[in-house]
Image (spheres, rainbow, N blue to C red):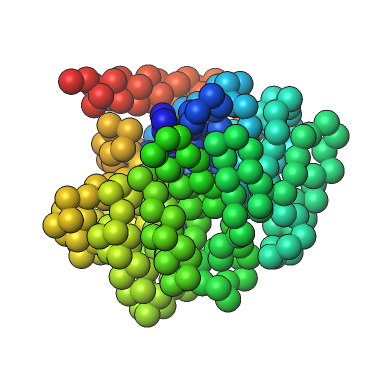
Length: 325
């Protein structure tokens, strides 16, 4: 089995886009990427714009090779909508090229879903020509998707998400998008599945609405997974804070003691972990650009576009150097 994580917070963007080859087929899971329009009172830094374009390009490239696509839920960092959005680097043509001609297993558009996601789901499901069906209960070659899991706590207003399992021989990869490790039943279910590799969205410690009790519970569940499973990739909400390693100290220690791997998506891909979103104030201080840079880039200003392309080149060079033996 080959697992390629295309985008994640540790790689500088909001995403959990993943490409997997299992058996005779290839699967693209959660083909979305976006940037927060504002974080710490700052707009996206040009380095984030470079990361956004890199991940979007990787998603579109891997979509051409995918035999099937999975959408776990309808947040814009997990799927590509048929609309132009400022910081998704996509439009209707992008979405059409992404989904066309292959089975699409997408979260049920009416069950266990909130209002905003229901509207997005209805828009996606209404697009002509898509080979779309509910993800819940799907079984297609190496892919199995069971019942949906809560997006955070079981009482969360964010609804539920579809978790994907891909099996090849004695290998089992589970993509547990946005569960945030806040529901004990979901964590127990993951341990019972006994994946050889688990990709999971960790607790959203950065979010002011998350209580101290929820933070403690999410970290406790992360430590349980680290002790129980041979490899856990933790990212997404958890990496929206630069303090993830200090906050997750107990879990990282548990993994080390058990001889297991607990690492970020970037580390899994042989790259340096770069939570750019949380570093925005420092990035803007280190590299001073005009405050309206992102607006100029969105408007297509040639100078801004050229600078982002230059930063993309730096990003590629750094990735190549990091992966060099």
